[in-house]
Amino acid sequence: MFTLPLMDPASREAYDGMHGYDDIRTAPRALATEAVHAGRDDLARQGLHAPPIDLSTTYPSHDSRGEAARIDAFAATGAEPDGPPVYGRLGNPTVARFETALARLEGTEAAVAFASGMAALSAVLLVRASMGLRHVVAVRPLYGCSDHLLTAGLLGSEVTWTDPAGIAEALRPDTGLVMVESPANPTLAEVDLRAVAHACGSVPLLADNTFATPVLQRPAEQGARLVLHSATKYLGGHGDVMAGVVACDEELAGGLRQIRFATGGVLHPLAGYLLLRGLSTLPVRVRAASATAAELAGRLAADPRVARVHYPRIGGAMIAFEIQGDPHEVIAGVRLITPAVSLGSVDTLIQHPASISHRIVGEDDRRGAGVSDRLLRMSVGLEDVEDLWADLDRALGRPEGARGRIDMRLRRGARPATANPQRPAAPQSLRRFRPDPHSVLRRNQ
Ligand SMILES: Cc1ncc(COP(=O)(O)O)c(C=O)c1O
Image (cartoon, rainbow, N blue to C red):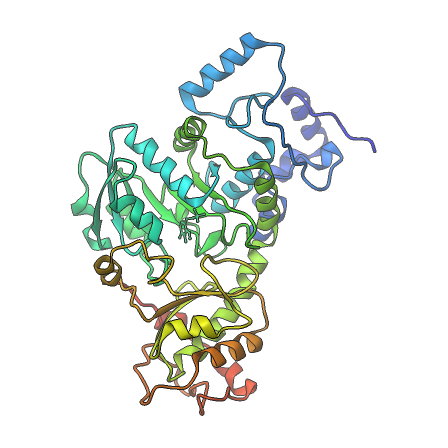
């Protein structure tokens, strides 16, 4: 097969101009198009269809003077070195494709990928601390390990926990970061990102967008300067990649690349490849799973065995619900649904946050953040809604006496999904129920 050799920048520019590739790259494209094409724009001119996986850890060069200059330039700004790669910890072409694509989806100048979501958050904290800005203002709940990293001060940071209304007051001269998750793990509480970004003033806002994904929300458009993902979740989408990524402007990205180079939390190229592949189906997966989740949220809200349902205003494939009975029995009872921590996979996962994802958060802090011991968190996948409901219905078991508090308001005319809670209602009547996402938002006050 004939393939064009890798081109130097000058001949690539000429080639692109000649063949009209410049127009394609710079024209605005819809999210679904970006998801499939971003990070792959050079493939056709190389005669390739699937992106190549570059597993090299190092790259030969006879020009050590040139290498010295490129390393000096990287040390000064953190900008990606021009020309061929130098060493795997400094950058990898396959990972760079994923970074380019994610930045396009989030609408930022750049993105920097890491070995996990926690490695990504660590790099953000370290880059701010290296500037003498160790203080972090954060809103609970956050993912349990993010909470722990801040509370324990493992990286030398100091945290002030507050609610969104208290952010401006909590800022100090040494505040380097404000951090929120929206929808938050595990309660799905949402914050008004635009208002929060305004309250931050000149302090960068980091929004963890793991649950929403750029399909439902692009925090950078609302003023967040750093958008973090546990790419382990929806971006990968198949439960087989561990990764993290921060989308941000080029200035912050430079600092993050320098921290990544110095501390080594790099993403493996194979993971970069799988993430790029995951992105291409992200909009389709998120929309399909969200439709199923909205349906299940409605059925759960109308079920007497469920005390409360949390489902975000912006929609999504995550549901949190508090049950009347023993949550451990539900975890023990599911058969189709996978009883496992994590989320964002093609299969549906359920877990008990007080036992797993938020176990590491102190009991009082956990409860104060709205994470009740009866709360279950479910990540809805791509299975058929009736099969999922049948499994949940069985796992929820017998109702415990009287009907509990149903916080999720039903639309006028909608009937509870199950007349007899032991038996699912006829699918036809169930399908008529659609929760109004605006009526089911639960905030942690
Ligand atoms: C919202 C959120 N942020 C960050 C993380 C950490 O990501 P990782 O497990 O990829 O390190 C998680 C993990 O569950 C998460 O749910």
